[in-house]
Length: 476
Image (tube, rainbow, N blue to C red):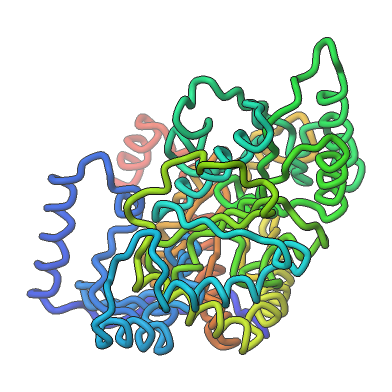
């Protein structure tokens, strides 16, 4: 796979006037009706009307390559045939569309397929709990589970982590104000909190965690659990080193602290294995699963060691935990990814794309770091002219925003992440072909070059006003 800089800039012919009016009118009405709730629409002014696979067609008649994939929800891309067939089969069967907590054939098929895909040591003694429809609901349920199981209230989490936007996800279900969350350093090779990076940085992060837990005077009390992401997504696409993950498993096991792996974005083949924890070989006590497991529809579950169950559920499971369409779509997605080896395919294609992007970075001094795992890729943009105290240049969120706009103008949908929103994320579906990967990288390369040119133009000082008037007099 090769990438040629200066790829296509125009995606389609100009849209018909009528379509443009529909497009503009829809955006205008959303802005009026949802002034503060347009998370993606504020930066991606696209009105989707049709979609298939990697491609979205907007109301303006343009076609876009979607590398957001519903924030990782669309493992098979838009409207995959096996997903549509699974949904139609439920609709045509006359089965209930919603059956919260009830045993149904659809739910039975989903749990059977899910257990087939799990790490074997967890699957052999696992319980499944359906939560509300979002990953945040599942995080809240996981935290409630370990709090009840241990009788403890504290929680260990990591800098840069994102586990949802609700109080239960951020602090703990119910009485969130009673839960103390201790933030620990997450290994971040490019911006190591200890200034070391690499294996040394990961080792220091692990030692910090051990010291904090074992310091009886100034440390933290034994917590209810530790929650981590095998690859931080919203945090800037930062893969956790496998050795560090194994250390976290050892640390928590030795101290009887349940380990929760949040696989909301990393699951269902995204990183090159079916679940991202498989890279390191660890078996968590609890797994939080959402996004792609619903086959594009809202679904979230937790899977956990059966011996963690203590009497009544620790959190209200939610009214919308019985979505039969999501379970059917999820079963079809899980089976398709498993049967067609899409996880391994994502690992191979993602590695190729990373190599191409790292080669690109060598000729672009504003690309600070390229990282990722499988088809979960991040490009961190920096401002080398601003100096900085360490080896990493300061992040450049303004440039990242320009790159996102330039990508969109070329028909490529990407999103930003990271503490300073200076990381451009690529999350294409697992069905991405080699040809589509080339098209994605072509457009990204072209957008990056255009963004850098615009930054250079802005940084070049213009002649002062008196000088311009002198030039005009001389010309006269």
